[in-house]
Each structure stands twice: as C-alpha cells, then as structure tokens.
Image (cartoon, rainbow, N blue to C red; front, side, top):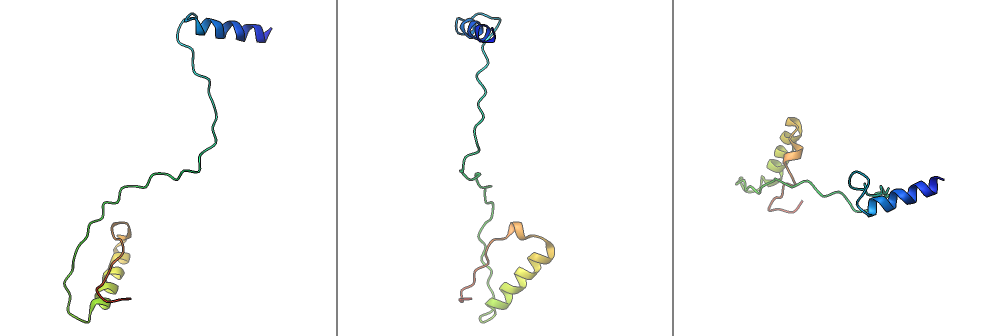
Length: 84
C-alpha cells in the first residue's frame, strides 16, 4: 500500500497538484576530495634598507619580534639579499 501512495503522490506533484511544489529528493553525497578554497592573502611586500652585512641579523630580529608579538599570521617569508 505504501508503494501505491508514493506513486500517487509523485504523480500529483508532477502534475502540479498537491498544494505546492514538490520538494527535491534529498541526496547525500560524500564530501569531495577538492580542497577548501584558500583564504585571501592580504600580505604586502615591503623593503627594509639595512646596513650592509647585517641582513641576516636584522631578519632574525624581525622574525623574533614577530613571534614575541604574536603577529605570525600577518607576516610571510622574510627574504634577504644574501642566501641563507
């Protein structure tokens, strides 16, 4: 009997009767393997002029201060003109 009722209901919904629009069948889909979109990166480039030969010590001081102040999310990679 339940089958007859569902068939009548679906016929009524397809015909536009039954007191409103038919609700779409709910489908459960497994989460896809697509990664979440990344949060926009609002970081900007800045140039700091320092005394020649002190690039590494200044970079280290900036990185230390950023960690102390808890500002890691606002800073990216600090690049110097000399190789690491």
